[in-house]
Image 1 (cartoon, rainbow, N blue to C red):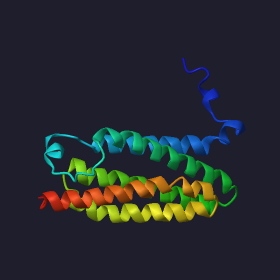
Image 2: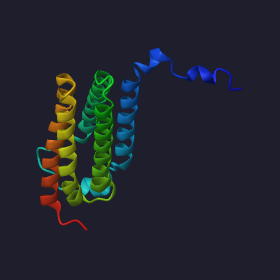
Image 3: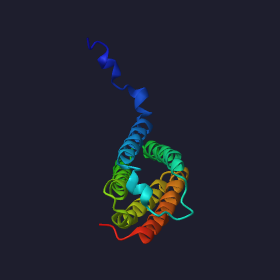
Image 4: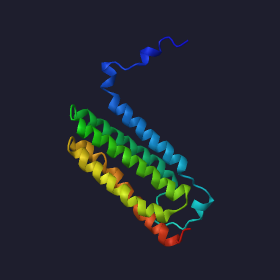
Length: 172
């Protein structure tokens, strides 16, 4: 029944591509959990939004591009780090830490309906993106630049978050 299961084990050829596979799976996990927590319900649609807010349909494609770019950046830096295990550990930690902060923002803003707490949390998310940019730059300028759209998008989202709090607060 389980014949051939051992053939799923990775050989030396497939290991060369594993950083991209693993970083892609990590990005998919962040997208899945963040998407699960993002509830566009009656509460969300009742919020007064700034006139410049992008349409709701744009958020999915934008996040997809950002997460793909982050996965490529992580895979590229991991491969370039070769025997630098300390760099690899920091890289993995920073991407996991960032993914957790990304998901926590969605938890506060959408699931718990607390944009005010999300606004506080986004400062840490923003800082973690800056740390990713600086850390990836050590191994690859291109990998670092791939994270810029994430930084820009979270900056825009932070302004949107701030204006939503101002227009709708206080939240309880």
